[in-house]
Length: 437
Ligand SMILES: Cc1ncc(COP(=O)(O)O)c(C=O)c1O
Figure 1 (cartoon, rainbow, N blue to C red):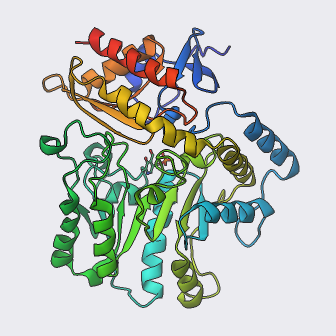
Figure 2 (figure 1 turned 45 degrees about the horizontal axis):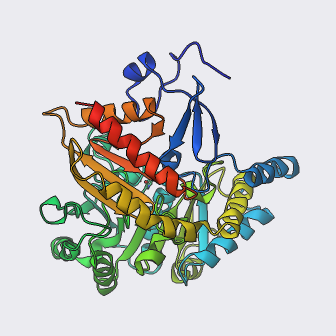
Figure 3 (figure 1 turned 135 degrees about the vertical axis):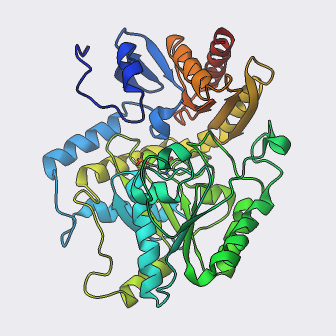
C-alpha cells in the first residue's frame, strides 16, 4: 500500500491544508460500499465519495470498458470530428431524461456543465431575437460548482466572498429553508411553496425582458440538504413559463438514481428547459459532465444562431472517448441491476433510520429525501462548523465516511446500500455524536 511520506507539495481543494497534513485521512483502496484507509481499516462509504459513486466502488464492467476504450481509441478531438461513443451516449441519455430533452452537450465536471448551461441559455435568448434577456437568477444557499458562472448564480457566501465581483447582472431568489415551521420534516416539507413567488418580485424589479434563465438545484445538496417544499418547483416552473424565462435544474447530485429515478425532474414531475448533470454519469470513474436541453433550444440554435458554428463553446475533453465508455458501462449497470428502483426501496428505510436520531445530543433538525439524509447540529458557540467537522473525524475513526457541510452531516451512500449498512451508518454517527462535545 502506498503511504506518502511527504504531504507538503499538494494544495488540497476545499480542505484545511494545515490541519489535514497534521492528521491526514488517507484512502488507498475502494470496493463496493467500502474504502480502505492506509492503516488498513474498512470505512463504510456513507457519501458515495462526493455524491458520485452511485453504483458502488470498483465496478468491473466500468473498468473493462475503460481499458478497452484506451486500447481502441484513447482520444479524438471533439471539434469538427466525432467518435461513435459520444453519439451513442447522447442517445442513451435522451432515452432516460424527460421527454423532449433529446440534446446533450458534454463537459468534464458539474461546474463545466453549469457554465455550459448558462452560456447556452444566453446564446439561445440572443439567437431567437431576445438579446436583452441576459440576466441570470440563482438562489441563496445554491451550489453550482466553482466556475465564475457557478459561483455568481450560487448562493453560499464562502464560495463567493473571496472572488471579487463575479458575473454582473445576476440576482438571487430567497432560499427555502425554514426550520421554524419545517424542522424534522419527513421528505419534502409542507411549508414554503409560496417562496417561488420571489421570482415574481425579481420580475417586478428587473422586468422579464432582461431575464434569461433561473437556475436551482431541485434538492439543494452542498448547502446542507434542503428538499424543496411541496409545490415549490411546479410554482417556479409556472412563473418561468408565464414570463418566458428558461428554467435550469442543476441535477449534478440528483440525477442517476439519487431520488429513485433517472432524474430529479422525473421524481418531482416538473420538467425544466435545461438539466445539468455529472458525478453519477460515469460512477465517478472518469470525470464527465453533461448539459441536456429541450429540443426547442437545440433546434432554435441550429435555425437562428450565427452560421456555421452555432455555439462557440466546447472543451478539449468534451465527450472524451474514455469518459463515454465509462458512462455507457455505468448506464448499463444502473439498468441491469435496477439500481434506481433499489434506491427507491431504500429511501423509506433511510428516512426511518435518520429520524431515529431525533433527540440525540447536538441534533436540531433532520431532513431526508430519496437516498439522501442530513442531520443538522447545533453550532458550538461562534465556532460554526467546528462540531460538524469533529463529528466527521470521529465517524472516520469509527469506520464511517460522512460529510460535514458546516454543522450539517450529509449522507448520500451508493445506491447499492443494504439495510444492514443503513443501520450501521446511523448507529455509528449516533455514537460519534455522543463522543463529541
Ligand atoms: C448541484 C451541483 N452543481 C455543481 C457541482 C459542481 O460539480 P463539480 O465539482 O464536478 O465541478 C456540484 C458538486 O457538488 C453540485 O452539487
